[in-house]
Image (tube, rainbow, N blue to C red; front, side):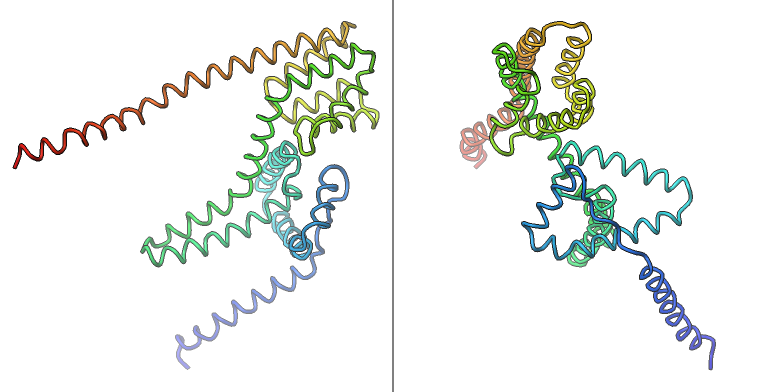
Length: 306
């Protein structure tokens, strides 16, 4: 038997043995736990009750997440540190998006690995037709890897913009409730329950109200809101409440002043956006003018040349 024939037999056997060994080791890894507490647990239960696809695929997702964590544990400490930092950043994005996917940070990373493989396969399939070589697979893998996190960030940014737009009216309502004799937690409860379902103001004030019901101080609950949303208007609102509480100033007066400042900032942003829109419209207008001139002058130029 020639050495080439031996290699042809030995290499597939070695690959098969390695795959079998990895499969046996992975089979010993228990699936990761399902999130059950907090907002993530509530969102997870809602998805399990409303989506049959998610309910059927959740065991596979938990098992794959456990495999990914097992692989990370085998990596050097520098890789584990980078993975922990990535997990913390994704947890912040998920918190800002109100757990829009119902996944933990580790589960989102695990699912991103799967979507990266799927994207690489689809990119390679399309690359065969366009003769792009490995570029299609590489591009598909990158898009698949970042798609889920980009979606979460997009949801978080939209919620932040919605909160910024609705904050002045909510602060006005809080001020009126406090001036009418209602205590501050009761005013927050009224705003949280009186808004439409799915309203960002109601969701975020509901979070603050839940923190207050659990015994957190007003300063701590609103500080968490400011750190979560990370918008200038929310930061100024929380700072005004904190200063009023520290100095003993009337909370209604602080709310009224903050509502006026929020409306002024919103008007300023609208004026800036209108000014930018005028500048951005210059290029389309120039192109449109060129097309009109070409339509008017084109026949005469062609007639003169003929």
